[in-house]
Image 1 (spheres, rainbow, N blue to C red):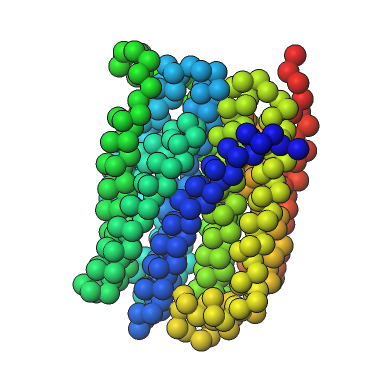
Image 2: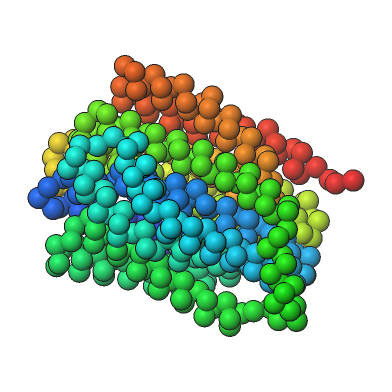
Length: 435
């Protein structure tokens, strides 16, 4: 059984992380509801397609948070304040470089992306408006990944909660003003997100300055940490892993568009529910990252095993907490998101696919957090390669060439199952005592 101290630390981090995480999909639900109640459905469909670009961009570069969390937690476990500071400095250099490159390449990114996405001319126009509003927040969004990762690695989840609440309340307020009051529709939704990210970054920097460890390292020493080669390899492994993960969801959404606008929006609503479940589960996964990294830094394999056991149970419980309302009262849940009856009806009939998807997904998310805490980038990369290319890819191809929506959902289920199995087989070696 987990020791009381470890259990209390886990649940404290877990619950704070959940409160922080839930503000993100709730804001997405508010965005969906505002756009979904506009007279033209194309605005919601356009934002759904354009959001895929930012999924690739921000989630694809999510290694900035993942690497920072794992390395910071391990440094904290060793009691190495200079390494804690160096990890942050390294992440900031990466984030600022990638953020500026994103702004410079924005026209190319927009043009290439919309040539690849499937949508009617009206839907594409709305998507381009959203892109042009949101892209300005890219540098701040990438910086926030690093700063949030640093706070999580130091078990300062309360600060992450403060940041996300402030940013997302700002986002909701700006969405209301831009979308409903000024009539800016998709462009307003994008601009609101960009401005909210900027405010979050400003507040995060102030919080960092208040909690700097003060190891006495000179700025040149901290900047030298940005050239660490092992971190570059870890970032590359996690980049490949995350791009494959985002690609699976992007292909799922893009193939949904092939089945018509109603099917696209129905699957968008189902993915919103899935995202709520993932943010609950990620509360436990983030706690696992922090605690697993710290216990690895201390060299305590017994507590490492206890962290994993506790988090797997918590993750599956959270999955069913989210599933039950959608299964029992689907028309009420989906009716909150859109007033289009045909979309509500189709989402209701497809809701059962969420059960195996999220049940397997819960284990996958927790195991991701465990191996991220161990900074096991190669393990995560190889598991995702197998899951995306063998578990998801062939079925998705079948769905595109005659299989239809049912086969597409089977592909998603198999993707989650493969992620779980490919990571589970690596647990014994991760928990084995080191020579």
